[in-house]
Length: 448
Ligand code: S3P
Image (cartoon, rainbow, N blue to C red):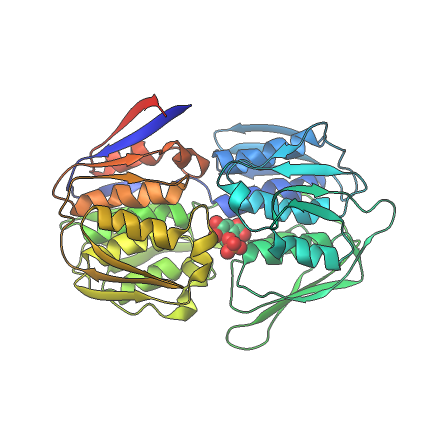
């Protein structure tokens, strides 16, 4: 297999005006809901990354006609809730937990059997969190021992799933979405209650497709979402905003390097995703939101970041779920900020594409940063430059590859990051853009 390494030259000033690719979460959902809707869904701004393409190919394998992607445009000829066909082969979800967990919800309601498989990283990620509620709904799903992929989903035959009222044991939009999508195929009203707010793209998009989801705030943290099974989705155009989780690497880059001044255009600013902006501001970052408006039920804005000195903080736990994918790069920011940054309440980071607490602590140690991993977070003593020349392993995790690239801005020597082809899962244009705004990163291809 070909290996891809990034060679990152130290330093750089980040300037310019850029647009990062489409939101990964919304891109996945546009294919899933478009496929089970009635009519043709036209998507613009679709993320042409490996993760969302895995979802697209899986629905093609189930008989859905999908044209594109071409320049971010996709047309999906919906087959309705019950129109999917048994695939001839196992469906390969690659590196994508979102694809596997959300599709498990849809597939649990079909009358055919199929299998979901994934790559080395996905094959180590916990699936009991979705198979348990789906089994409560009457689904029949087999996993590998320990609750890991592959998932063999037997289908329900001619009977439908049972609606449940499910309280999530962890703050997870994937689990919430899986249960709600299975709820489309259930008799009665399916409800989820989440312990803290998580991204609500599924609820918003279902409502956009004319399928009512009722969300009720139970208190400052818990929200309940309910839907009635057996309705129909009606196709509608979807304009996917730029992914705030991809923008995060550029926000961080501009926030940590002196003299920087960067605008990132048309970024999705869904309130359940903006934890990165809040946390950077608490650290002292100079961030303004310009040109706020709405596209297809999702708020967007241009994010303007100018360099300002940063300080370490205790990250409020209420912001953790709202920035859950951004911690690898936030750890890099914390390493440059004066003083101590403490993260708690983030044990979910241990079950992402890699164990992001351990892997990032190891990566920061490699370059000479004092980072102490804890059960549910990290303590970082920042304010020093990364002292060593180092080689970092990404552990099959795109966000480790990209976060440690940004660490190069505060380095005194060249960094090498090994196993970086995974960046293509979410951000195929990362290297082009990071070089365009002022870093110097070379891509070296070789054998693994
Ligand atoms: C996602 C939910 C989050 C996030 C992932 C995308 C989604 O996962 O980390 O990158 O699109 O629903 P969890 O639900 O496991 O927190």
